[in-house]
Image (tube, rainbow, N blue to C red; front, side):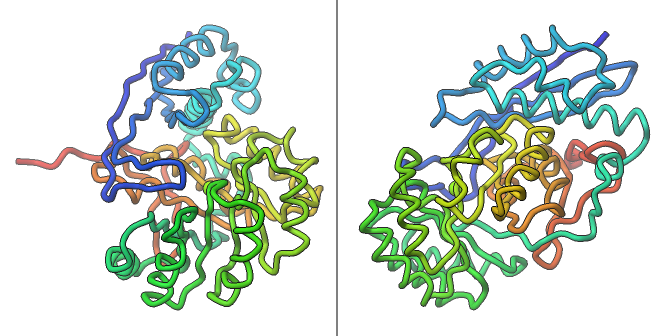
Length: 339
Ligand code: MG
C-alpha cells in the first residue's frame, strides 16, 4: 500500500525573472511524498502556467495517478502507465518519487541504479534574466562559479543586455529567445550573436513556425536548440532538420523515464541534447541532474535562482553539478537554522 502526501511550497526568486512573455518573482511548486514500507520517496512538480497547469491541477493529477499505481518497484514505466493527459509536471513528480523510493529501498544512489557515471558532468549554465545593463553586469560578476551563462532575450533590450554580459565575462554565452523573435529579427541577429561569442540559440521562433525554423537553421551560423517546440519523444522526428538539438525538461516531458527515451530518439536523429529546468527547488533539479552526464549542454540552475530552497541536493562546483551520494535521489530537507 502506498501512502501519498503532498504540499505546496512557495519559492521566492532572488531577482524578478523576465522572459519575452512576462515577469515573475515567485513560483509555487508541489512536493509529493510516496510512503511505502516505512520509506519515503520525494518528488516535485513545477506546473507550467504557459501550458495551463497549476498546483491544484497537478495535485489532482498526482492523486489520480497514485490511486492507479501498481507495484511501486516497477518504477521505470509506472508513472507513464498511469499518467494524466496534460499534466506532465505531476507525472514527473510521481516518476521522481518512485525512483527515489527504489534507490532508498536498495540503499543505492539512483545514478548507480541507472548505470550513469556521475563524474562525467558537462558544465552547467547560469541564467541571467532581462534587466538594466548595470544590473546584468552585477549578476554576471556575482556568478563567478559558472563556466557558461544563459541570457533570456526577446525584447528591444536584447542588444544592450548581451553587450553587458559580454563586458562582464569572457565565458560562453547561450541565448534563449523563448519564441520571441520574428524570422527576420532572428536572421538579422544570428551573425551578430556569433560575433559576440554566443554558443547556441534556444527557440528563436514560435513553436508553430516549423517551416520557418527549418529555413532559419539552414541560414544560421550557430546551433539552434528547440525548447517550446519539443515536449516528449513523439515531437522529435519532425524537428530533425529544423533544429540542431532539443532541450529536455522533466516538467515538460513527464519525468526521468520519458527523458531517457527522448535522449535515445534525439541521438537517433543526430540531434544534440540540452537539459533544462523550470524554477525548481534542489529536489527536482537533483533529479534532472542525474541525466546530465548523458547530454551535451546542461542548464540546471532553477534552484540557484530562489531564496529559500527547502532541500539540499546537487551543488555546483567549478561550473559543474555534483550529485549527492545518498540513496535514491540523495536529496534531504534543508535543516532548519537553530536559534
Ligand atoms: Mg528555453
